[in-house]
Image 1 (cartoon, rainbow, N blue to C red):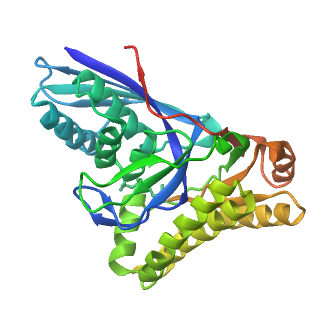
Image 2 (tube, protein in one colour):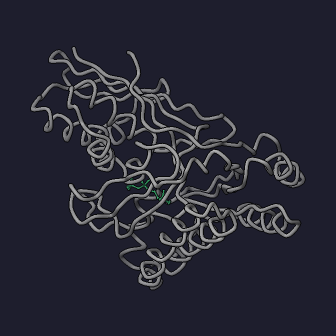
Length: 326
Ligand SMILES: O=C(O)C[C@@](O)(CF)CCOP(=O)(O)OP(=O)(O)O
C-alpha cells in the first residue's frame, strides 16, 4: 500500500476557459486567468495497492457510480503510466464548501487528486508538471495548483499547456468574491458539454476567440496596476461574452435563470451607488461578485435587501496545492 493526500482550493475564472482544441489532452482554445479562493477546497487521498481489484472513488462519504469512477480511473491511468505501476487505487475526496454555497468544483477535486497521486507514486513532479497533470483531469484544475492570480497558458501540446502565477505584489489579499447561491432546479448543462456544443455550433464562437486574448492582456495590465475598476470591467464583460456564445449555439442554451438576472441587475445597482463590484458566472445559475475587501460588509448589506444570508458566502484569496499527512 502506498498513499498520498493533498488539499487544493477552488478558483474562479475572471477571463474564462471556454472551448477545447483537444478533448483527450484537454488543450483549451484560449488562455484563461483566475483567482484562487480560500472558502472552498477539497482534500483528496489516494491509496494504491496490489490487493485492490479495481479503482474506487468515495466523494463526501458516498461511493460514486460507474461514470464518476471512470472519470477518476482515466486520470489514475495517466498517473500510473507516469509511475510505471498497474495497481488499482482507492480515492477519497472531501469537499469543504460552506453548505450554503452549494458549490462543488471539479477544479479543486482534480487538483487535489493530482497532488495526492504525485505523493503516493513519488513522481516528484514540479509545480508546472503538477499543473499539466491536473489539466488532464479537468482544465480549470490546472489553475488550482497555484494560489492568487493564475494564468493558464493554452499552449499547443501536453507539455506546453499549463498554468502559472500572475505577478501581483499580493494585491489579491485586498480583494474578495461574494457568491450568490441561486437556488435553481433546472438541470445544468455541464461545462464540458456546454463548451463542446458551443465550439461545434455557436455562430458567436469566433467572436469570443477574437476578444478573449485582448481581455487577458487587459486583465494582466489591471493586476499590474492594481486597477480594480479595470479588472472588474474586463471580468464582467468577458463573462457576459462567454455566456453570449451559448445563446448562438444549436440548440441554444443558457446558464442564466431569472434570479441570475436579478442578481446581475442588483450588482449593477450597487455599483451605481459608488461601491465597486462586478459579477461573473460559470456553468450554472450562481452569480459571483468580485469586490474589494474594504467594501464587503457594505456590499453584503445591500445584497441582503434581495437575497438571504444563507444565499451569500464571502471568499478571499486562497493558496495553492498542499500535500497533507495521511
Ligand atoms: O473556469 C473557467 O475558466 C470557466 C468555466 O468554469 C465556465 F463554465 C469552465 C470550466 O470548465 P471545466 O469544468 O474545467 O471543464 P473540463 O476541462 O471539461 O473539465
